[in-house]
Amino acid sequence: MILTDQQILAEIEKGTIVIEPFDRSCLGTNSYDVHLGRYLATYRDAVLDARRHNEIDTFEMGEEGFVLQPGQLYLGVTAEYTETHATVPFLEGKSSVGRLGIDIHATAGKGDVGFCNHWTLEISVSVPVRVYPGMPIGQLIYFLVQGDVATLYNRKPSAKYNHRTDRPVESMMWQNTF
Image (cartoon, rainbow, N blue to C red):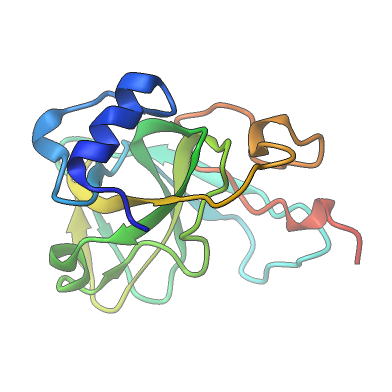
């Protein structure tokens, strides 16, 4: 079941959902709009290797924005820091963003109960598009969890994305054993 606006507000009051900064005007009928943070990143190497640490170059967008190019993967970040302690958050693109040819995530739209951080975005575009810090970029949808959770994400020793940061985080696939 997806939480409605009133249920999201109730969870915020209980502290089981945290959104910083929170702006009531960003609360939709059953979602919360998030915005593009001021940092983007690109991978240094043209060929990425799943078994090694692929380093990124991070840069800050100015108020004039930045033109994203097709064929380039950009890592972005939400301006909002979020925590979810009793629901499963899903990040989806906004239709207005999709209609500009912007995809905000390749496969990582679902968060875990206990995720506490800014969201890293895997951004790709089908045509050149100028984006701006603070522009609406996606929406969080919250799903109820049935049953108890044994270990929240932020308490898992194996969780790779627990370090709080307002900058994009590169893939940590290389930390897996395979």
